[in-house]
Each structure stands twice: as structure tokens, then as C-alpha cells.
Image 1 (cartoon, one colour):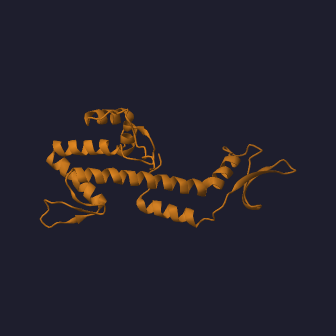
Image 2: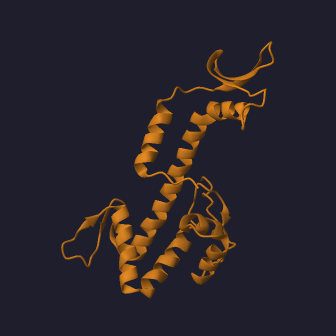
Image 3: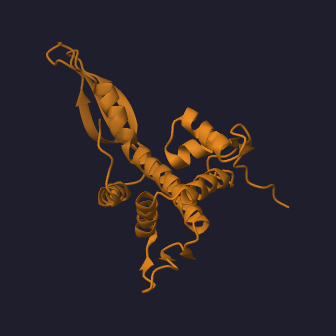
Length: 204
């Protein structure tokens, strides 16, 4: 199983992809007179790489065509994957912000303050979320967990880049749950798990 990227690794990946030359790449097959087959990665008539096929069975695994196609689409695929990660992170942050508000934390994105903190320490999003979870664990606060549960389920109904979908599907994405657990969470919070939500309002 591949390990997930750290924020630093994601930034480095984005920099590499954005630094690569933009433009469509294609794969062309070239048959040689002596029977060899080569797949070329091409941009605008210029061959950037050759990937030879194993026509004599000398290699244990031969996937020249698939390798060439992967290389040709890598930049586009990586940038689209990064855009998907960005959208998911924004949606997760939105649900976390809502949960912090529901728990009575003051402030807003990037600057959260605990009213109970005599020093008025200001925390960023990650630190605030970790503190909230830590306090719930330490205090065993059933009420705080109830508020958090309600907030996650309720805010899963807001307009989303995912588009219209059953509420449980939005909860599953936001909370990282399986479908059964997401449906159970909706019911426990007092919502219909099959209600279609997430649609952007029609323009006036």
C-alpha cells in the first residue's frame, strides 16, 4: 500500500508537475524492419522518449505501450489529482470550521480562540481541531460529541463540488466513514440519510 503524501511532498509534487512543459502528448507505435516495436512519446512531431517493446520474450514483464501512455498523460493526470485533493481539503476544512463553531469556539478560519483560555491563545485550523478533539477525549463530553455529530451531518447538506447526492454520501466523504456508518450517523443526528443534498441554488 502506498503511503499518503505529506503536505511538503504534495507541494514538491505540484512544483514538479507545474514546471514540466505544458501541452498534449501522444503515443505513436514504430515498427522496425527487423521486427522490433518501439512506442514513442511525441509532442508536436518531436519525439521525447522511446519505449522498446520486448518482442523476444527476454523480459519478465513487458508493458511498453502502457508505460508510454502513462508517461504521456502523467502531467495532466497529476495536476487533476492535485485539484481533486485541493477540493477535498477545502470541503473537509469547511466541515471542521462548522464543527468548531458548533462547539462554541470563537474566531474563524486560521484564528480560533477558546473563551475558556485565560491567555486568549489564538490557534490555526489544525491546532484548533486537534485541541477540540483532545478536549472531547479528556472530558468525555457527550454533549460536545453530539454537537460535533450534528454539525458534520447538517453541514454535509451544504452546496458541494460533489454535486447532488444522498446526505449519507456527503457525510461518508467528509468524515471518512463507510456507507453503513455514514447512514447510521445521519439517523443518530436526526437526519434522513437518503435526502438529496449538496445542490447549488439555481441562479436568479
